[in-house]
Image 1 (cartoon, rainbow, N blue to C red):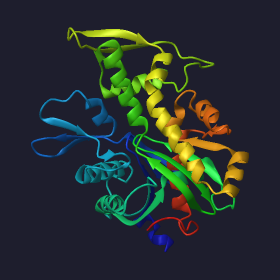
Image 2 (cartoon, one colour; image 1 turned 180 degrees about the vertical axis):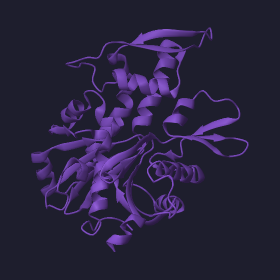
Image 3 (cartoon, helix red, strand yellow; image 1 turned 60 degrees about the vertical axis):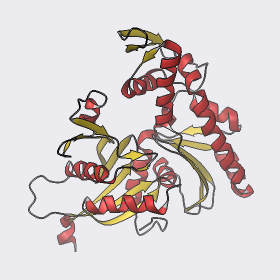
Length: 340
């Protein structure tokens, strides 16, 4: 069979609301925003990923930028398919006479419905996937962090992505209890947009709000190493003229408080559902944070103060889920929890 190994390419996909990552041969080969630019008249895809993000919020009437995933699931089937196909194209040999068959492992939110699951599988199959397996995001994050998920020891994972926050307690190769809420990074971005409009009378775009979140985003009003104030450019709502204002991390912490409180409530709810023996394990091992949301300054401290438990941020939390999906791909026979 080794003679025909080149005919099968194995890829692991972290299909996220904000970013899509693809792992091929143990390397992250694609790390692009989950966005597509489409020509409105012909319906043709003009750009995918970073190129499409550059156009976001700057398009004219003939071009539309679409995020095919909403709240962690496929919202636009056709565009999602084009995006997956376009990203896979970037990693496969350009001039190949024989089209390789693809074996894929794709991660999905734990709160996904059967219909949404089917949409992911169909999109992957239409994009060239011959064998498609699914893995739940918290499970992939746990594997990516380096937790032995098949041990009879409980581990609590919080994966805060772009569209969903996944909170799960894992033991013996399965999710014992989980809480999946559609409140995550995108909501934090919208909070910043709203705050700038209400507090400073300035309207900003999604990309600028995302930049503010990265530069001065904070979960706490007091930080040990506070970032410097950040200059924001937008349009004055009164005059319509572009202007600049400076925002501090304390302001952004205030703006994000409401959404972070919802995530905290979901964490407490998941802890309440946890069987006592596993709760004892979590008391010893603590909580693990993964996903882009884990990068928010002071979030680990805030969650620790709320739960009175130690909180560990995964190494490179943005890629923890993708890494775990890649490991699951290599051990398809070993991991029984993969959904076919």
